[in-house]
Image 1 (cartoon, rainbow, N blue to C red):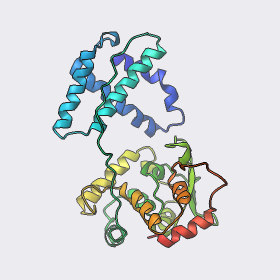
Image 2 (cartoon, one colour):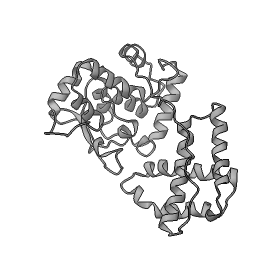
Image 3 (cartoon, helix red, strand yellow):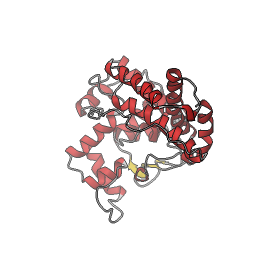
Length: 292
């Protein structure tokens, strides 16, 4: 199986096209983890020798961790999916013709847990309070403040460069583009106006945030650790990502059109997309009304 994983990286290389070094690392890690866990439980068996009992033993390992409250069914299913991806890709691309024992292994997933949004009052009184973020390194602080009025994903903010941070435009904005990295989806390419504390944050970092350009996971870990240690999480369920949800909630409360909200967030529109959408100037005027 470990040899199959070595082969997999080359056989599945098309999945890395357009990804940054950081994105490739985050793509590889869960597959490495799934194979490593399987080998610990079952052994480094020849792929053709993997049996249904082996897969059920692997599933039992995850069932016990779910019962102990250590992981969710969703997390366990990811390991099953990643292991299956490695096995199926090698089986297909090496033309092994094996009947892999992979069916009916997934766990029934519960309700997906989403991070709650920060309330506007909490952002104003706690996160933006004088000195509240002074212990956070400057680039992480800039990315956090940049997220307040843009709602970008942490990885999107970390990937911005001097080319995609456009402070001298008639409407200052950032452009989320596949520059040296792969976007989450075709809808993620977009421009977002800069307003309020987010505009001020980008004025301090016009060339972007090199410390986190290839380590967006490190960014989230750093920010979440700081927020938790300093009592800046509104509830234990909140996280850095809650700023993205908070921005959407403020737009919803202000009655901003669904098309504009989806365009700003890089989400798919649940109907045919007609026209170019709202102008950047129009969107900026709307966002300024809810900016903090």
